[in-house]
Length: 80
Image 1 (cartoon, one colour):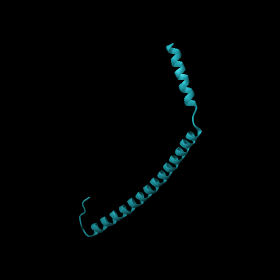
Image 2: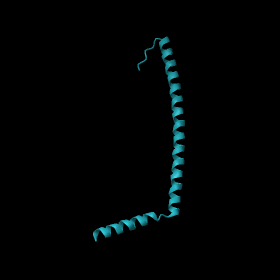
Image 3: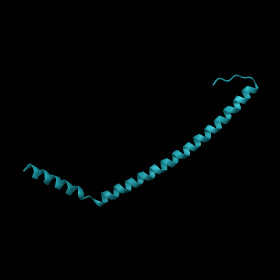
Image 4: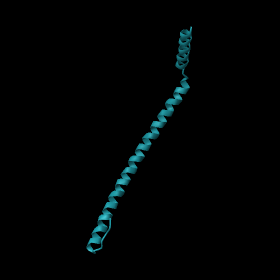
């Protein structure tokens, strides 16, 4: 009796789960596509920011070496 009841409940659960609403599935698919588009946009923004940071590092390194040379020519000690 108990086994029959369990199998009946399992069959009912599987049957109900198989009856999905197409509108809900379409909404989920659209939401996943929107999320993928946003993630792609964020990746490109991060890449652009990384490029800007690398450019700024290059500028800072050049300025640091220029300041070091000027200090060396004028015998000014620089602590780092």
